[in-house]
Image 1 (tube, rainbow, N blue to C red):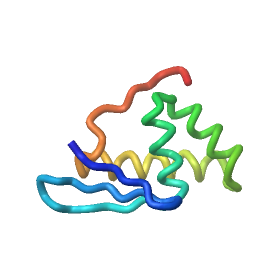
Image 2 (cartoon, rainbow, N blue to C red; image 1 turned 90 degrees about the vertical axis):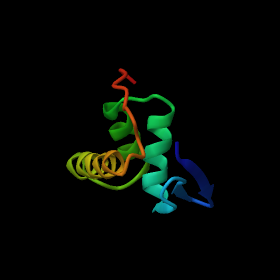
Image 3 (tube, rainbow, N blue to C red; image 1 turned 180 degrees about the vertical axis):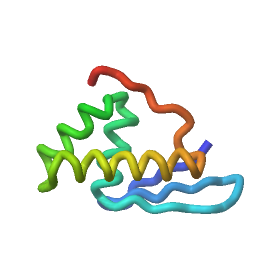
Image 4 (cartoon, rainbow, N blue to C red; image 1 turned 90 degrees about the horizontal axis):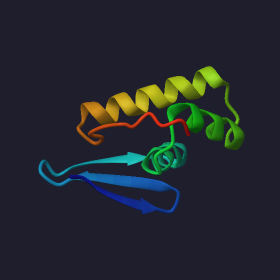
Length: 84
């Protein structure tokens, strides 16, 4: 169980057991919100490309890095792969 708190365009994530906290910038917050709504990775890539200036390769790499870091820290337990 972690606590997510959105502040302006950023998100602060608190891991209550360890007291550690993490911050996400506006793009990271947007990506996490999309996954929280149950969207697939393919859908999230598409909406990030529609909203921000980046290449598909950059977006996919950023999403993979973000998810890997969050999983490593125990901030995501599972990630559903819905069709979008």
